[in-house]
Length: 137
Image (cartoon, rainbow, N blue to C red):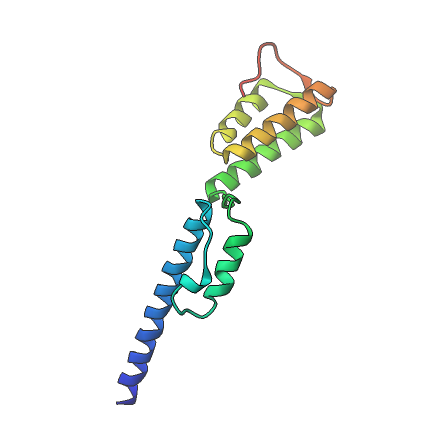
């Protein structure tokens, strides 16, 4: 009998947790849309008032986009390409094409930042273009 009671308690706790998760997701979505939240309108859930206050404090902040593992690996490889070229002081056609391959796999914002970094290094003369033509990226 005791085991059955423990299982029932556990099931109730999991149901309450699932309901809380749904409420939090709903609050986050409302805050992204610019809606204000009123803690008194929320169901009686522990911590709901604090969640509502936090949502009201930053209703228009975009959610942070976390790069995928593949995007992170591509960013690491791209940075390595740029570092090797910077140490050598030369930007080769091969560097350009290898970087272009990695940039396509990276998170867009990170790729744009790295492009700007390479262009700035080229403009400052830290990297000499060691091929004729236009960089691939």
